[in-house]
Length: 160
Image (cartoon, rainbow, N blue to C red):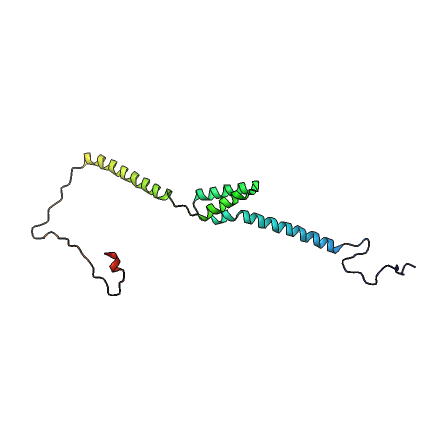
């Protein structure tokens, strides 16, 4: 009697239907698939939120800090306006004001120290008078020099 099938049962069952007490393989595969899908969506979301920071990585320190703060605010508040602002700031290249200013400050500092040393040494060293050239050696006379443009030079007309 145990070997006989029920009258409503079919001869062949699909592979995803398991017998009572067996391991449901399809359920386990789907659990792993859904967990991997959630992990991949999270990684994609975080990579997308880090896009402005990656774009501004080669920029100045101040610009990178502004973009990073706006990206973090966008990440925690879910406000897309901050992310768009960070993306726009990452796309704009700010001019470098600090390098020329620090170069000018260094030059002024060197000039100031040089002038101080000149005042200190002026009191101890007598002034040196330049010697005049020997009468047999004429003084060099400087004349303006204009090179002839080459025949295949097309930029000579624009130089003036």
